[in-house]
Length: 209
Image (tube, rainbow, N blue to C red; front, side, top):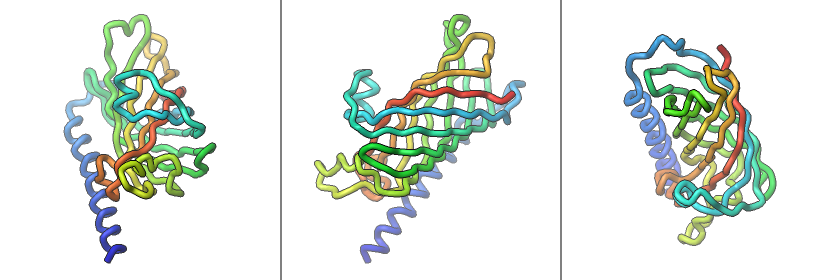
C-alpha cells in the first residue's frame, strides 16, 4: 500500500505540473507579431546554492551561500511573441557538484516581458518560468524540510526560474542574465515535499536568427 500511495502521489504531481504548463500556454497564447516565432536560443549558466528561501532571496536581494554548485546548458524555442510578451519552451541539462553530485533535467514554460522604458540604453527583459525537474539522485541539500519532520526530498519536483536578462540595444543576438534556479515540492504537490533548493546563477544566451 505505501508503494501504491507513493506512485499515486507522483502521478498526481505530474498531472498537476503538466496541467500548470498547459494553463500557462493557453493563457499566454494570442496573436503573434511579425517577429518570426520559431527561433532557437542556447544559454549556458552556472552558480552556487543559496542559504535562504525563495521568497527571502526575491525580497531581500541578499543571501549567504553553501558549498554546492551547478552548471547548466539550456536550449530554448521561441514559439510565439506578442507586443510585450515572448513565449518560450526551455529544456535544461544540469550538472551538480560539491555537497551533491548528480545530474538534473528540467522542462519549463517561460514568459518573458520584453519592453522597458530604458531599452534604448540597455535592452532589458524579465522572465518567469515553471515546469518539472528530475534529478538522477535525491539531492542532498534539499531536505531543509527535515525541520518539518520529513526525511528527504525526492527526484521529481517542480521547477521555477526567475530571470533578469540584459543585452546591448538594437536587438543583439547576445545577452547576459541573472537567474534564480529553484526546485521544490510546490507546497507538497510533489510527494508531500516542503522545501527545496535555490541557486543564484549568471549566464549568457545566444539567439539564432
